[in-house]
Structures are given as C-alpha cells and as structure tokens.
Length: 533
Image (cartoon, rainbow, N blue to C red; front, side):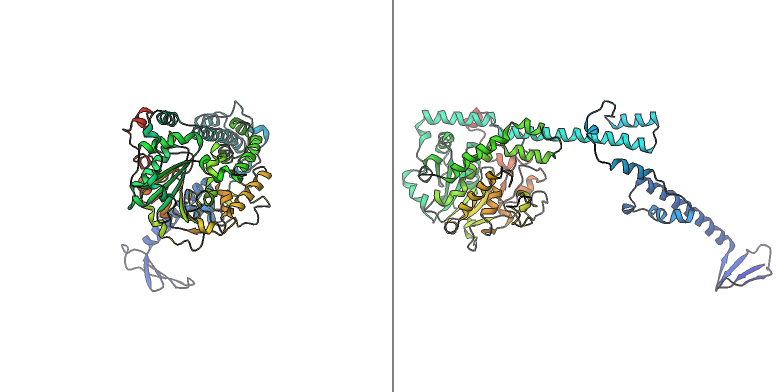
C-alpha cells in the first residue's frame, strides 16, 4: 500500500502496495519520504523542544535577558508562549529588596550577620528562608562586606599618606652626613660652578635645565640621568634650586660628585636677589594658604573619622591635600622662572621624581609656535587610567567661578616642561596664577583640592604647545600597569604619585629604572643603608 499526499496537503491518495516487505512511503510534492524518516524527524523535534525548555530554565536563573547569549535565550522568549510555562517572580522580589535605600540601622554593625560565604550558606541551609528572607540576608552580608572593604581602603590610603609625607630614615641620614661633610671638608664646599664657568649660567647658547628639590638623592638621580644620556654634555647647564636647610647637603653632594663636563649650579632660594626684595606673591600666598589649611587640618585621623559616607578616593584626595609638599614654596617656584632667570630665553623645568633616558637637547629644536609652555597632553593615550585627564579631573566645575571653563578640555602635565621665558614675560601668566590662588583661598580651597597643576591649567590656558608623549611618560608613582619594558621606551619617565622610587611603597618592577643611576658603593649611600629592595 502506498500513501500519496498532494503538495497543498489537501488530497491524500492510497494505492495498493507491491509487497509486505516494502516500506510504507509518503510522497510530498515530487519527492518520496520514508515513514521511518518521518518518525525519526518527529522524535528529534520532540527532543529539541525539551532541550530548549531546559536551557530557557537555566538562563532564567542566570538573570538578565539582555545579556543572554545561549540558545536558552530563544527558549526564554518563546518557551512560555509555546509550552504554557509561567515566568517566576522570585528574582523580582530579590531585586526589589536589594534596590531599596540603605537605612541608618543597616549601617550599624550586627553580630548575627554572616561574615563569610561559608557562614551565609550554612545559615541559608539551616533556616530554609523564602525569597524575601534570602534577599534580606544577602543584602545585610553585602553591606557588611562593603563597609569592611571601604574601611580597609581608607586605612590603606592613610598609611600611604603617612609613608609618602614622612622623611624616610635613609634620606634623613644622607642629609645629616652630607651636612657634616660640608662643615668639616673644604672639598664639600666648592663654589658651584667654578669661577671660570660662571658666564655659562647666562649664556643662551647652552641648554639650560632647572631642577627645584629639597631631596638630595632624588636630585642626584635626575642630574646623573640627564648628563649620562646627553650627546653634548659640555653644553648642558643644570640649575638646582633648593631651600635653606638642604643647601649645605646639596652643595656637598655635587661638590664631591661632579658631573663634568656639564655645568652644575646649586643655589638656595634665599640667595636669589629677586626673592629678597620687597613683597613676593609666592611667599604671601604661602602664608595665607597655611592659615586656611589650618582650619581643615585636625589631623589625618579626623578627616577619616568624620567622613562615614564619602568615597575612599575623595578622602584620599583630602589626605593628600594635607601633605607639606603642596604647601611648599619649592612646589610653586616654577611660576617665577622669568624673574629668577632674567637673562635666559628658554629653559626646561624638571621635577625631582623623574628619570631622563634620552638626550634632551632635541627639546630646543621644538618650535613652540609662540606659546609659552611645551607640555605633553594627558587626555589621550594607551593607558586610559593615566592618560584620561581633562580639566574636570582637577577643577571643581560645580563652583560658579570654574563653570566658565570647558570641563572636557585636555589637561597637560607638569614635570618636564619647555618654557619660553621670552614669550612668558610678554604675558600675565604669573599674575593670573596668583589671582586664582587667591580665589581658591577665599573659597576655602573649594576650586580644586591640591597641587600646583590646577591653577597652572588656568594660568597657562591658551599658552600650551603640545609635544610628543615620548618626552614624558606619567603615572609610575600611582599605578603599576606600566612594565619596565614599557618605561624604557620613553624619553622621560615620571614617578608622579605617592609611590616614589626612594620609598618602600614604590612599585618594585619600576624601581630599577631609577635605581640604576645610584652608585650603591658610594660611602654616603652605603653608610645610610640605601638600597633598592
């Protein structure tokens, strides 16, 4: 017997079979399909429906439909309609509980809250709660762990603040030993530079670099790395500016460790005629800054104790604002370079936490196009954490005085800057800088939180020429994503941040690029037990 089905499925014709052993066949259209094939197809389709049902159930437990990527997504969308399965409302109850606002009672620690995942699972198995009770218990545990994490993070920032603000024992030892050497050894009191080289200090045919530092070890690394990588070291002049207390140790170090044929000048702030004449804005600003900051000081512990809801990063910024570094004259001295060096046309200013890895004389070949400041932008680059800084990263745009600036304007970096002093003297950059310092003081330090870069961004606005990022790699003092091999590709690397290479909190994989410019066999270095690890 044969069964014939028409293509439109409207007509079925039965024909006598030719034999018992012959398979029953169904003809659809112009093709013949065996009954066995039809049976297997129906069986496979039934199995596929079960498969879709199981996967849709798994994905429902997993959660978010928009993020679903398995075949279960299909089951989740059409399964309930085809199979008549009802959607569970248990996740909605959990989401509702977890999304509720946190009350003051929940912030208070309780002894019955599970401390670990193991305790949580044991509690759930023992009490067998419903969905709402499960969500409440989960919420309590997450809040507890969140509080513990926040407390640990703030504690870390507090320790880092203390570690970065204090003078390490070995640096204090080095300063004392060099001061003693300065007192007892005439060779440690040499005039820097020697009399015959004094004319080079105002000769614009030389490459002039300015370094402001009260850290002898850091200054020695900057100076050595600068001269060692110079192609024409005899054309390099390094002006080192320091404070009164560090002058003797600094002079002793560079008298006993000459970097000939380069020219090294060591000068204390009080030795500059300009700073000793009349009223100096930088000194007046420091006095006012100290008075305003004293209202906020109350100690680091007070800042942590009275901020129960602020994010750890905000508290860290406030702690950093208390650092003596940001209230130091040395930190603001760069804004007076035109007055301090009235005979020079162009200088490169260097921070003491950098390392030079290439010849910097090429910086004099860069045309600043009439701009005052040659700097590296910090809003674009491969490192999205370090190179994502715009004006809104530093300035408080909720304040009406700041609102007129563009928050998305690209920021730039201090630390290795080319300054055209001739062009600078034709502007009011310095006066603008102190105007905004004054405004920040009147606003109780609310325009920005710390540092000299925020007022610098405003003062040099429109006067910055962008230079290649090769000349300044940032972030080696506050993130450890940079590898040593990455650091070696830059002309200048900058350990900006708390993790300075001379501190124990430095990132160990980056410290060798700084330490290689220290002679650990030197008697002063050995005597103060200065080492890399």
